[in-house]
Amino acid sequence: MKSWQKTALAGTGAGIINGLFGAGGGMVLVPLLTALTDLEDEAIFPASVAIIFPICLVSLSVGAMGGVFAWREAVPYLLGSAAGGILAGLLGKRIPTVWLHRVLGALILWGGVRYLC
Image 1 (cartoon, helix red, strand yellow):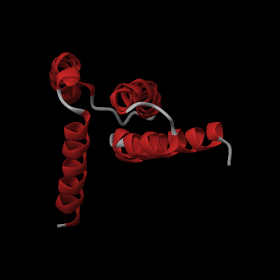
Image 2 (cartoon, helix red, strand yellow):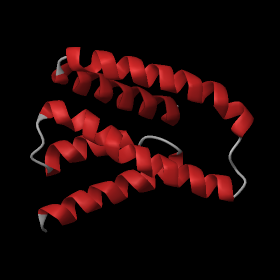
Image 3 (cartoon, one colour):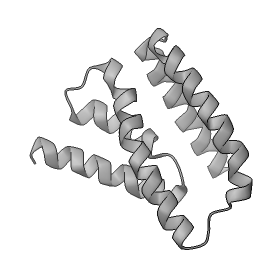
Image 4 (cartoon, helix red, strand yellow):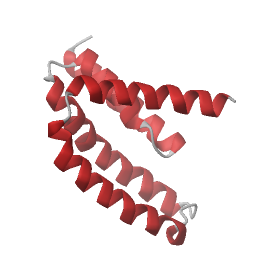
């Protein structure tokens, strides 16, 4: 399989996860970008965000067209998420990549255990 096919497959997987579960595409995408691309570790997380953003917009559009998006309930989360995104963008460069990977792995495990129980 060619490199662009692998990355397209990774993007498809992230889109499916994002569309089905409303989030989590980055949890799939970060490990896939690590395995399937030659990106430096420092570029993996920003690349994931850049890829997930349009996927989220597509998922949002599809949900809104279907009438299943609760705008009123979402606004406080959107404001908090924007603040968190800015903070993470400013601080993310100072955190060693190995720790970002570890924290992401721990969050994936915690979320999996939480949903299984």
